[in-house]
Image (cartoon, rainbow, N blue to C red):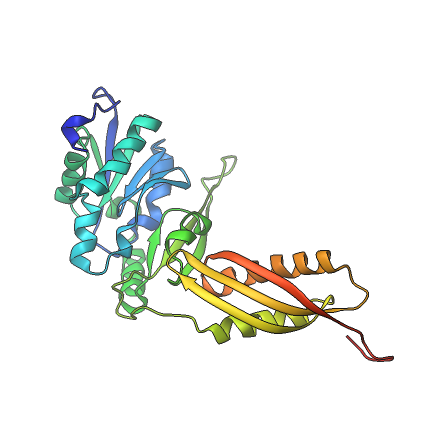
Length: 290
């Protein structure tokens, strides 16, 4: 699909804003705050189209294998990168949009590649952040390789399964009598981070599950664990021994819920499938504590 083949819904009426600042100075961290103050519901950041707190189109450029590929993806160089964004424009018909970039030239290029009108207003990171705040953000970027995406963790977990990903909640008071600004963002390390790609051993999954089994009265112990790690997340199969006297179905479902929650929390892996099978019943000896 080419740009000339799509009749964009704007009619030239959409207002395009830009939020500009050097890499690592905290743009993504403050993006939703800026958008909120300007009453903008849509943000373009690193290849993603974000509507309020939800990714509605695109794939994060931070997943690219190299820095060069990241920049190209963020600029929507390729037709297959533009297509889902343009379709989303037609669907949502945004009245205004905020484009994030490291320079005036970058945000102008993004707007042009997506067939958007010229940028009507530019906000610079120096307008909303102090020198000390920008230095702190830069230090974290350089020393820890962490990047922020302005959407909640659960929105992008499926796209970053196997990457370090932590939630960050922001609370900002707007003054007495005014509604506070509350937002959640996701912190990730990109593929090209100097820390490199990391994998999680099956032993780690088993240790987490064994700990949870001890905390679950209906489960005696885990007999077998099998973990398959795919691009979209992990598939886990377990066989357990149940304690006599407990409802098997309720016990299994409770253990399954806790297991999925804790694995996703502790490993940042998306659990796409988790099966727990009761293989036998354990009958405690008289006086034995379970």
